[in-house]
Image (cartoon, rainbow, N blue to C red):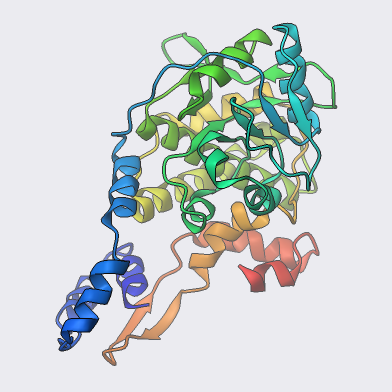
Length: 353
């Protein structure tokens, strides 16, 4: 807990004194017997830590891959889209329903086309030897889930597109930057990034392979987008994405900047410049998409930010020092509590965050 206090204190100006106070109280040294030291040596393995730091620093090397017969978990809109794209290339994919075990002998990628709330179950149904082949496609903050399952640097795609119905034609979320260049926003990184980008290209969706650092930035930018636009749109009566950008651009822009600042100081990840204009442009491209607060997605979107809000207030450290922890996303909190008061978000979701 002391580490959490120090992290949050560092987010607010004027709390440097409290931070230094925390650092002045190191835990007392404990004597360990030889047998205890041997136990620690046996149980401590630095490889997982090194893999995670390589993941954060983008040092993992990726071998080129091509599209091939694959396993698709989930037969919804995204799953059906991937199956249809593979069929165009003559592939016969294995499509699994939710709750079906992933075959261990299949050599290709495993596309997890299920909501974020179902990923834990999908991972549990995956044999250990196939977990390196998982490709995560869900929106939201998935990094805590990866850490729980010991997945460092998995293949993950950030999809910036829209599908109105199963079997429908996807709309690519291409935007035009200030230089007049039009580009797709979808990115993928990991073992099967080449295969996935190739399959998406079959359907006319521009998905670029990216290095680990930039792919993570894009994924976190999508987190900011889905959190802010859905919350502002729902708070104003269930507007479409385009209506949020057109009618409440200043509000949603301020929230996007606030959440991006949180990402910067909590995860040490700076999002790409031009955030406001790019997200507004994307929202206008997807103008017909409705906004909503989905209970299943909540822990991976607004719930992720609200978890830190709940730490705000006066806290006492294990050293007995009182520290004032600020709310790091006050605008997001204001809208979220208003949504709760209007029955748009269940109190149980906020309590469980």
